Image 1 (cartoon, rainbow, N blue to C red):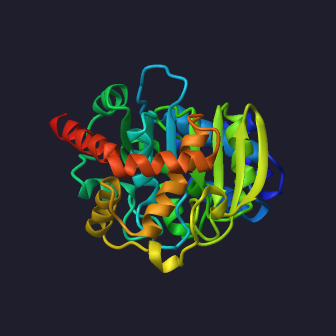
Image 2: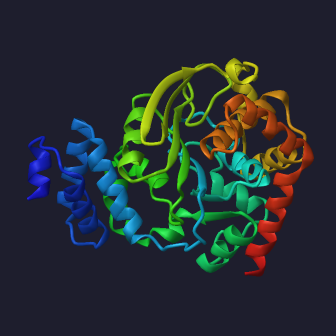
Image 3: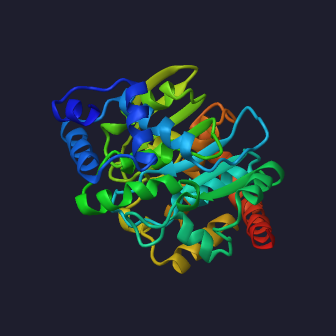
Length: 335
C-alpha cells in the first residue's frame, strides 16, 4: 500500500503520487493513513515527481475556468508562510501586469502568513470573491484578468482539511496551491518560503508542462525582495537556470523590511489603490515594480527584468492597472 511505502521512506513515481492524491480528493483515504503519509513525506522531503503528481490530481479535481486558448496566461502567486506581514505585493503586481496587457489568471486565498491575503484585499477593493467561474472566465477573456478564490475552486480539499488542521504543521499541501491554477496558467511567478524550494518547484513546473516560470525566495519573503538578495530558479524553453539576484541589478534601490510591511485588508487595499494610481512610498513602488518586471520577463513581454521594471513604473504612473481592477470589480458584482 502507498502509505506503507511512504512510511518506509520509499519514493513514488509521478503517476503513483497522482493516484495517491486522487484517493485523498475522493474522500477514500482514512485520516490515519493520510496523516501518516503526510508526516512521512515531510520528514523525508517530497521529490519533484511526487509534488507534480499531487498537483496534477489537484488540477484534475478543480472547478475549471475555461478561458480561450492563448500563448500566455500568467499567474503571480506565493506559497505564503513567510511570516513577513507585507502588504499584498503579488496581488498589486497582478494588476500592474494586467494593465500592461498580459492576461492574468490569479489564484489565491485568504491570509496565510499575513493579516490580509489576496482574497481579503480584493474583497476590500470591491471584488465579489464568489463570482461564478463563468464570470471569471468572461473577465479573463474580455478584460485580461480574473481572480479565482481557491476555496471555491478546490472543493475536494475538504477531505484533507481535518487532518491538516490536526497536524498543525506545514505539509506538501502548503505548496500545492500555487501549482493548481484552475484556469491552466501557462506561465507563473511563484514565491516560496525557503530557498531550497526554488529549484524543486521549477522542476515540478517543468514536469507539469509549464511554458515559462520564475520561482523566487526573496531573503525571507515569498516574492522578489528589495531588502536583500533574491534566490531565483527560472524555467524557459525547458531549461532551468539558478541564480542570485540583487535588486540593484534591475535598477531598484535597497530598502528596510519595515518599509514594506502591511496591515489590515482595508489598509492594504489603500496601499494597492495608491500604487496603481501612481502613489505609494518609494519602497512600495520599488518592490511592486521589481515583481512586475520579473512577471513581464516571465511572460516574454520584455528582454530583461530591468526593462520590465521601467515598463511597470510607467503602468503604475499611468493608472492602467487601477482601471483594469475597477472594471474587474464591477464585472464580478454584476455577475
